Amino acid sequence: MPIQQDIVAEIPRLRRFARALTGDAYRADDLVQDTLERALNKWMLWRPGNLRAWLLTIMHHVFISQARSHKTVEYYPEEMLPEVSARGAQDEGLALRDLDRALARLSLDQRQVLLLVTLEELSYEETARVLNIPVGTVMSRLYRARERLRALLASQDGSAHLRIVK
Image (tube, rainbow, N blue to C red; front, side, top):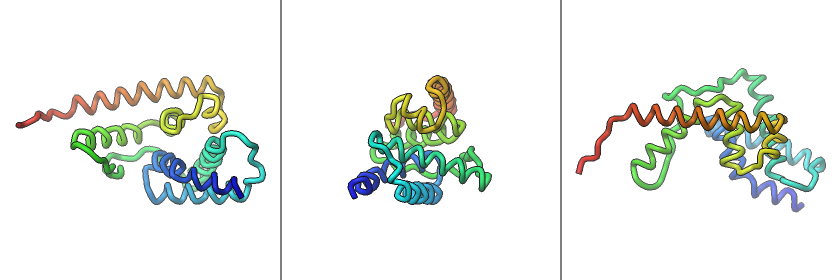
C-alpha cells in the first residue's frame, strides 16, 4: 500500500521530533513505535494532504496521553541530558550541546511549537492543527520560545570564559 511506504519514509523525521520532545532515545523510540502503530491501524482515516502533519498530530496525542498516564517530567536537569554527537570542530559540538540543553529547558508547549515550525518546517496553520490550538497561540508560543531560547543561549555564552590558545 502506498500510504504505508510514505509512512515509513517519515520515520526519521518522527524519530527526530520524538527525541527532541522526550530528551531520551529509548522513550523517543517507544513514542515513534506507538505513533506508527496507531497510524497504521488508522490509515483509512487519513485524508490526502500533509502526511507528516497527520503523523505529528498522532504523535502529539500519543505523547500527551503517555505523559498523563506516566506523570512524566517535562524538564530535564543538565546532568540527565543526552550527549549530542556532532561532526566538525569542537566549537560546533559545544554550540550544539548548548542548544540541546537550552531546548530542554523550554516548556513543553514552547518546545513543541518551536520544533514543529523550525525543525519540521510546518506552517503556522499546520502546527496549529497538529497541536489543536489557534494560530495566534502558535505565534505567541513561538515568539516566547525564541525569546527564551535567545536568553538561555546568551546566559550560557556569558558563563564560559574560554580563550583560544595557539
